[in-house]
Picture 1 (tube, rainbow, N blue to C red):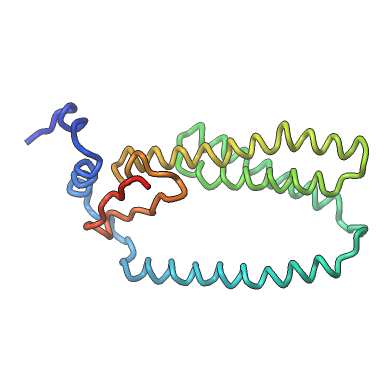
Picture 2: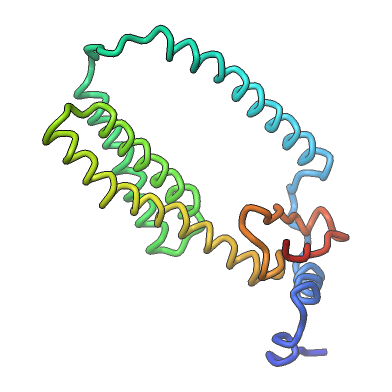
Length: 193
């Protein structure tokens, strides 16, 4: 039996997802549900431990760090950071140009690096023209570009998930589950919340 384009278009997202699962065999080498759950659990624990350790460390730094400090390797630090940012931006441009999924992590990382760059430029600037230039650069260039680099791939990721019937079209990004249809065949597309 062949399905026409009209019949496929008339299917619900759940019906399309079920069709995709029936037509696409489970790829070899995919970890088991138990392995995925164990990895997720330990990564979550690791992030929570890191967050808990960072709280007293941040308080300690706030109390003990001097207000003024002369940094060594100042030029190497900033040039190295800018080389890293440049590399991520070039990788993002290439991945976007070639329509490769690698654009998701590189664009997100580029956006985060731009936010860091804006923060450190503003916070390390001297009052006057230097601070004004850093603020203008942050507000007019770095932060808007960071928003584009972070939000764009997230929207594209959501679109791909909707297109493949993995999530409901009305789902909000921050409530979007990580669908693993090959491992959870009974998983239903959650209703929008």
